[in-house]
Length: 276
Image (cartoon, rainbow, N blue to C red):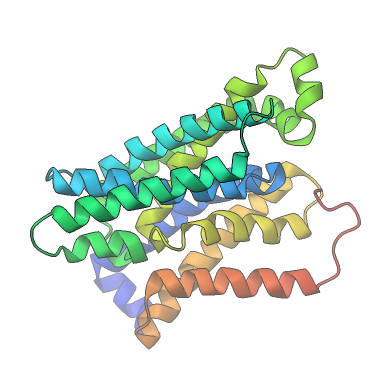
């Protein structure tokens, strides 16, 4: 009961809980697209390229999250373009994404190294510190959530076609490449949200594992999104509770729970009509 008593007394715990619940919305929705579309590697490229923008913003004395959002969106557009070019056989898609991954992280490390002093706050972005979420951060996460949900509501049918049969979607007049770029931009936005919850290092775990767990026991994409969102809320809340009671890193605890939950779910017999 000590956690729940502290939750009533301390604003920072309330912010942490609300931040985790809000992040689970975008994570459940966009993570489902990432898992079904099988673009986890692209999402990983975006996530790690984000460090470049964070490092530059930190060097210039700006908020690291502003640099993260800009670099995430730029990376999403580049990766979408790379995906388009690689289909014509000019380049290996995974190799170019690996290069973007390396360039982004290298730029970030270089700019961080050239910035005088040592900033603990920056380390929290790398490894996660949900306990440092402010009311302004909650507002930002809420706005980004709203953008993700609005995007999904407007383009749900087109995204459904894109995930399961891109060629058929193209024949139906859907602008596949443009829609794929938008989807990657939403992935970028979700990555920026999750960085504040679990940190840059573990962001892909939270983006994909709740959705992958939900996929094992869902019959439709919409059902998968709902279940992934609920699981994400349970995971982030459980991670906060356990880390508070046992004095553990919240981001790592949350990611660990998500990994264990997926492994357990994978051992349970799947529904006959689970999402493919």
